[in-house]
Image (cartoon, rainbow, N blue to C red; front, side, top):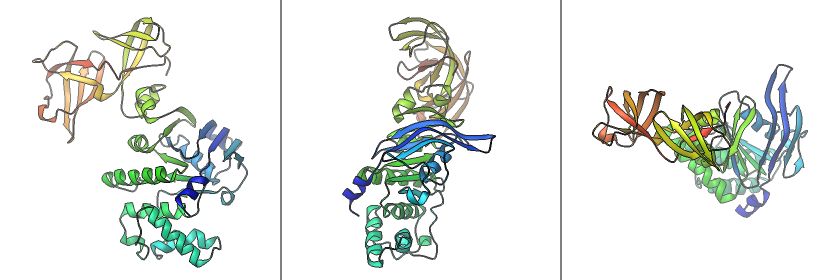
Length: 362
C-alpha cells in the first residue's frame, strides 16, 4: 500500500436529492444534494439533530436512504450494504480492542478479510508509519495517549485502502490542546495522501481548520456550502452567520444602492458594504466580535455611544459585552494590557471590512 496507490483509489461522493426518514414522523435528511471531489476534505457541520451524522452513515451504508441516489466514484451504491461500499470510518470512541497490541488492532480488518498473516503485518506496519507511529506496534492501546490512539484508528482505516475515509466527531474525546494537534495530524495525512474525506463535527473552529469546504446543515437540510473563508465572511443567512463563529446581528438601514455597493446606516454610523442583491430599506447586519472597536473618551471618540457591561480576560484577548442603542453587542480586543473597566462609557466603531448584510427574511 504505497502513497500513490492510496491516492489513486480516492473517489468522489455525490448525493442526488437524498432523503432519510424514520417512520412517517421523523425526517432526518431532507432532499439533500451534494458533491465531494476525489481528494477533497469536506466537513459536515451543524448543531445536534441537524442530520450530519445520518448523512455520514448513509455514505458508509450504515443507514439506507429512503429516496434519492448515493454515488461513490460515479457508481450508484444506494442499495449496497456497508461491506460493499469500499469506505472506512473512524469513530468518535476509537473502538480499539484493549487486549490487542497496536499492530493487531491495525491489522484486524485485513485478517478478518482473509489476507495472509505476513501481508497483514507488512501493511499494518506501513499504516502505522503513515500516521507517524512506526515502532509502536507492540504497545497496547492503554499505553498510548488519546491522540496516539486516534492515529491508530486512522491507520486501521487506511490499511483497508478505502475510496472514501469517514470521520465521525473524531476529536470530541480529546482535551482542547490535544484536539488542535490531532486535527493538524488528520489534515496532514489527508493532504499528503490526497484522500477523499468526509468529516463530521459540531465544532466550528475544528471545521474551519481542517476543511477544503464545509457543508453547514440545519433542520435536515443544507444551509450553505463553501470554503471556510466564504462561510465566515459571506454567510448565506442569519443561522450560518451565528453558527460559524459568533456574530452580532444588528438592525440597519440601507439608504442607497449604487451598482453592487450599499450605503448602510447603523445608529449614527455610515458604512459602504457589498449590497448582496439587496435594495434600500430595513436590513440586518452581521458583525464579528473582532470587527467592533471600542474607543475610550481619551481617543477620537466619534462613533456609537456605549457602556461596558462586562469585561472578561481570557488570556490572548479581552471579551466585552457592551450596551448600545442598538442592543447588547459582544466584541473582542487583543489589547489585554489596556483592559477597559466595567461601567466605562465608550464609543464603538465598526471595521470597514467584515460587517456583512444578511438576506431579508433570514
